[in-house]
Length: 397
Image (tube, rainbow, N blue to C red; front, top):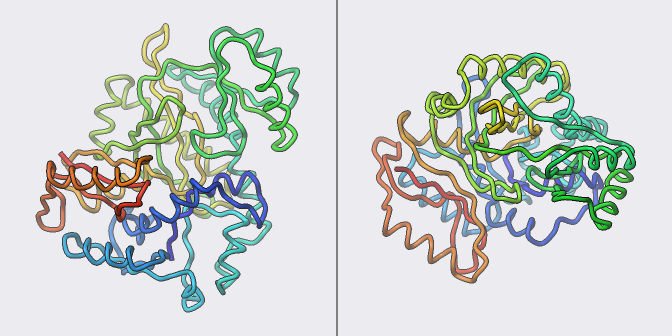
């Protein structure tokens, strides 16, 4: 059973069974609930081949009618159930976007078999694994191994040491909570640190044990390497070439094959370096996270430096499912190998603007499908109505 809970990172940071997400997170959860139909049933050993029909937890007639309409045009193997039916599937493994105590409590309240849920002790371990401190340490290790990489990252448990580093370092900096969503929990130090930012630092150290501090780099391209961890072994699961807003928040992915992504990255760094980083990170993830089973995405950047283009090989590690994997699997399942396009998660603030956009794209980029594969065109991956704010969609060229 698959379910989409994008508030996971926030819930894991708060680490209480009674956490209440912000209204925006609840709305995204509701409006994109059906998103797992596009990746459910993926076999980790084959990374993309479809197995038997998967069960996705998504409420409401709107989602059911949307799934029925999609099945008429694409070979999608999934069915939907409400939370109230979870108890009917006591032996099915539950696969959320990510695990946290709040979700565990909710599933138990709906009658989920506790034997298929992580224990409280396993959730404590996952929270430790999810700290950005691991990315700080892995980056340091990679820099000792490879001359062609860049980046600097520190974990400060003492605010005075942090302030001293900020004063002694030139340029802009970014401070990060150890636990927060990807692209979230960040503050930007543009010049000197303000009193309000000092208060933020003291609070984060008190609540999460430290602050991650980094110089701001001249980014050219975001990308990631995706891995699957099982029984103490990490296996490469593909690349992700993605886009972020100025704030660092995720906006979308390029729909490309791994070979095409390597070709694009090869303009900035050698393929040999990318492969060495992949193998080294596989070893490091296997060693650091022996008790974790699931996907992990290692975010990276191509940066422009005084020595030319360099790779920052470990910006952060997402110990959960992520949008890059959704895009990766969508490309493999529903597009031809040479096909290209964009995967986007968008927010529409004005009433009916999502619906207007959806109708406009359907007119201007009509979907063309052949033998269960998209040749070109626009497709919303989630339902769109007059009241919709969050939409996931693809546009294939």
